[in-house]
Each structure stands twice: as structure tokens, then as C-alpha cells.
Image (tube, rainbow, N blue to C red; front, side):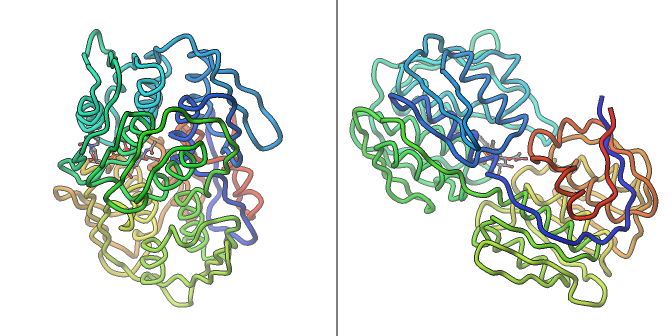
Length: 420
Ligand code: EPU
């Protein structure tokens, strides 16, 4: 199994180009199932997760062809409607093929995604919404078996115990595009990835209003046609490089990003002593001089501070002066990184859904193990700031969500290598 070795304390300098958004790409790839003809997706990040989604589409019978920086997906030859456990279990995002399969082919069999290291990941909202549209759903032998004679537009309240749900909104929005009549989704997620999906669907011929707000109005249409679409930049990758620049006391230009999607992250980085300059699609980050300050963070649905940046920001707070309280409101058990950060020299304790981070610590390189995608990113950031060498194992988690991570960090001057 591959490992990443990092010799820390090199200030990162230079430019890094942000890839397409993973969490936009997954539902958008699934949404190609809705369209007759061929869809061309540009700016697709080359990641393990997008590869898995393409393998699912391939297993359903879609024809996939790679071009330069884009992928073409033709769905005329879909003959199979089952997404197998072996593919689904590696990626929770696979659940978003349920809505499009059901809407276009009136049936879908998708393996239940199973457990996840970031805590329970129920799918009750997905199922409740699809049932409201008229689907009959049974859970049999670990699979969701869904069918429908036809889907009919309805009013659906999609709020759960932790607020809105990104992928449940995506699933319902996709299913509603081909339903008869009008669907209203109340308490819809407002994440930029949901807006990106709505823009793609509208490009295919759907009639969706209100994307980016909590109320979506979808007028069903008879058919959608394949078109070309470009995925938005990955805001979490950009946020991770913002922290990388600051934690190494370097100066990094983050290009091809979407600064308007990073408001909460920029705000917290500036509050903690980072200086960020924004020029169109570029963010330049450096330390504003002096030491970093501890700030408190609460993760919230967009436009709040993203849960997907919680672990990376925690690594930064370990080096700041004072004590920071980081509260996780989306996935209250998403603290797997704490044990490994403490092994590197941090002083973090958990109280309920909060982490108490005592600052002014020094990271010291050692052997650590990645546990999930964003936890792994936090370990890479800690290693970049650490005294000595850090060896990170189980790096396949990073391959799921960071395109060319080692190459991009090398271009910024990091002393990093991947070994087999
Ligand atoms: N929830 C329910 N019932 C449901 C669905 C969700 O109670 O049916 C709860 C969840 O347990 C959680 C909250 O609602 O407490 C929000 O979860 P959400 O459904 O929004 O998460 P998701 O759609 O499954 C996406 C991203 C995650 C990201 C979350 C939150 C993709 C493929 N995944 O997951 O990304 O953390 O939204 O923003 O889009 C990552 O990239 O590392 C990652 C985990």
C-alpha cells in the first residue's frame, strides 16, 4: 500500500490550480443518466470517486469516452438498473444514481451504502422524498429496490435532524425533472454543488427555479437531451490549499478557484491572522505577520463553515495562540483525525460535538494513519508544518478527493513523496 512521506517546515510558495469539484461531479455524472443522447462533462476531476461513479455508469451500460479534459457519456445503451455493492460500498455518493434511474427508467436497485467513519449516514430523506413522488421502495438483502409506474410532482419538506441534505436534495431534484407536474422542495440544501447540478439539469432542458435557496420549484418535462457542461472549481480543495499556505508560513496563489464559494473559510482564516487577497478567480494567502490567533468555528450548511474543512482548520488551530472550540453540527462524530493529530503533538479533547483545541503546540513528524478523506488532508497539513519526517499510510483516502495532491504540493516547493 502506498505511503506519503513529508519533511515539514518548508514554506510553500508559488501557484496551484484548483480542479473541478468532486461533490459537483458525482451528482452531475449521475444526472447524465437522465439525458437522451450524449453529455460532455468538462473540468472533471480525475479522482478515485469520479472513477467509481464512471464505473457504476459503465456497469449500467453507459458508453464512456474520454476526450481532452472532458468525458462523454452516452446513455442510449443502458440495460441494467442495479448498482452493485462492490462499487457502492467504497463511496456514499453513489446513492445519487437512485433518483435519475428511477425518473428515466422507472426502476433502480442500489446497494445500501453502509457505515462510514465520519458517523451515521442515514438515507431516510432520500427515500421519503422519492416515495412522495410515487416510488415504491423496499429494502431487501441490503439493496434499495425502487420502482414507479410514473413519478408525480409533489410538495416535499426535506429537512432532517441536522438540517438540509445535499445529496437528498440532488436526488429529489433529479427525479423531479422528469416527473409529471410541479415539485416543490422545501428546506432544500443551498450548497454551490446543488446549484451546479441545477444549472447542468437546466442546460439539459429541465425547468428548475430557486437553486441556491431553500425552496426549489421544478416543473417536470417529458425528456432531457445531452449537452456539454463545465463543472465548478472545488471549494474544499481551494480551502485546503489556503490552510497549507498559512500553516507553512508561505505565500500561495490559488488559481481557477471560486472565491465567492469560500466566504466562511476566508473569514475564519483572516480572523486567525491570515491575509488573503482576491483577484477574480485567484486567492493569494500569506501570514499577515505575527502569530496565528485561535478562533472558534461551528460547521453549518452552506453558506456556513463547511464540515469538509473542519479537520484541516483544526490542524491550523493547533499552532495558533489560545484555545479554539470547534463544533461539528453536520456530522457530530467527525473527529477521527484528533487521535492522529494528538500523536503529532496536538492537545485536543472532545466534549460532545465540540473539539477543544489548545493552541501554541508544535507538530513533530511521526508515522500516522489516514482514516477518511478530510482527516487525511488534516494530517498532510500537520505534516507540512511538522518538525522532521511524517509518514502517512492509507493514502487511498486522499486519492478519493484530491487530484494530483503530491504533484501540486511539490510544485509549491513541499518536500513530499509518495512511495509504494
Ligand atoms: N442526513 C439525514 N438523513 C438523510 C441524509 C442526511 O439525517 O437522508 C443527515 C446526515 O447524517 C448529516 C446531515 O443530514 O447529519 C447532512 O448530510 P448530507 O446529506 O448533506 O451529506 P451528503 O449529501 O451525504 C455531502 C458531501 C459530503 C459533505 C456533506 C455535507 C457528496 C458526495 N458528499 O454528503 O462530502 O460532508 O454533503 O456538506 O457531495 C467529503 O467530500 O469529504 C464529504 C463527506
